[in-house]
Image (cartoon, rainbow, N blue to C red; front, side):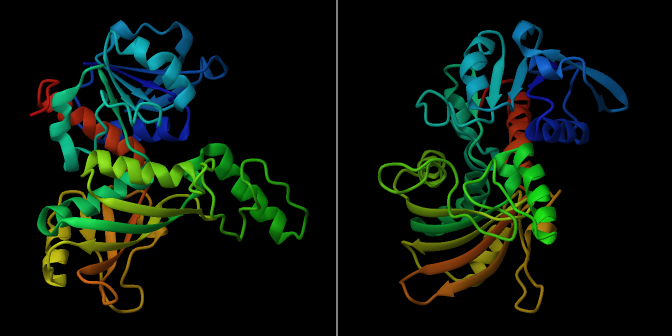
Length: 335
């Protein structure tokens, strides 16, 4: 079982490496590839130094699984080529809405792996991945009609350069110096920016539309979802304030039980100071955390939730590796 990580030197690529190091996948040889500017770099994996190779010259016939973690432009150029020789698990948005490419969160819809037509499997948007983890067990019990979600997203979702800019802007702000934004539309330090990705004609951003479209594809086309996505000056972990409306009656006890028993979810919901999860609490953790579970008394069968997850793990690297685990477990075929 040979595996390659494309974009091995980026945020998601390095996090994928960390996840693989903890997991027990039957890897015979791991290849790391990136752009020519990273060729020759050495990265440690399980006590060994692996050298980064140039993507342009990599032979994908040497591997069974290719993790793509280098963005949409790279996936567009190389993923179809790679898929002729191996299974591609792609972290970019490029293939997500392709009807012939399954969009997978293994705990939620692994049965969709029955329909691999192009040898490509898409990873959902990081904010979608954690959302559907919490929605799935509730939808199974009570049938979700409508979702209203506001996100509070970390800068790591925009890449390493954005993380570095947050640090630099914070220093400049504390020193009272002038700030010029490079990777954000406004100053990110000590601020909140209600704008992630480009605007569409209807006023929603692409990030907001991703959440709606991807949730429908993964979970249920009948679910109505509206989102407002906001970037906050924190390094890692996305948070979401979620309002649900069910078709069926529910009880808070059954909601808590369903969420806490769902693999990958963890309820931390005490109605005391600090009895909830924050982005710092979730950083480096595999679970999707659910807090502030309470009835919405303004609408029939309404519920409010607070959902927090490490976006680099659940929303990217961990989800991708769990897709690989599912494929291997089923001998590369979904059940």
